[in-house]
Image (cartoon, rainbow, N blue to C red; front, side):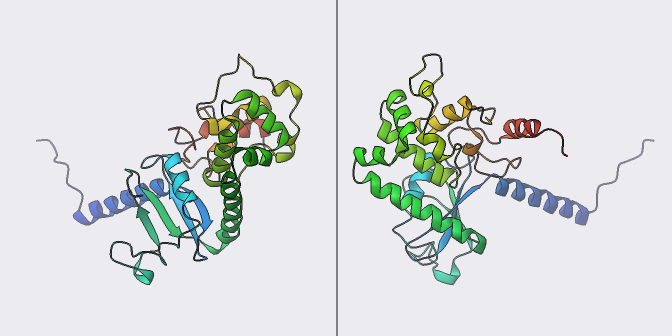
Length: 258
């Protein structure tokens, strides 16, 4: 007679299930892109989004509205709880949307970045409130000329770019401002051969590609992937969920370790 395979003991199955759950939780956490912001109450909150449950524009709009309201722990009670009764990490569904965002109390080493991003965001929103001319005056001269030549609404394109860089890319810039101030003349005229970016907020990717920037397989610059390289970070403007392709290119350019 053939031998019967014994079932695993129940406690071992339970252990395997728990280990699988922990791995799944770590994978989900790695796909959340976090942006720290200082809110009206003075607290710094890490706001996060994942391409699996949200879209970048909804997240961007949500963050723009956070500067004038208190944090979840000092604001309107959440699900009947308030203050210390509210967990340190939350899942939030903005009213009228079908997306889920994340919030957590920012660690101390994130407070400085949160204050910096909040200051930049407040400046951009205040400038936008003064109209298109003020917005364009705030843009680096070379990039402003490029936007005027290459986009139908250069003021909105600059606003989208700034909000994307501050909120979705956590302040990281694909190209230094000094370079954007003095773009070479050959880049200022529109090129009919060059494909248009999928998002007007991603015009910076076109410039980055011109200068040999590191592009992901999705075509966007590495700065559009605000998470840690190789950990499933989402793209700011498209469904691409990681930048392994760009990571490989970056390491190939560096060459073998010395």
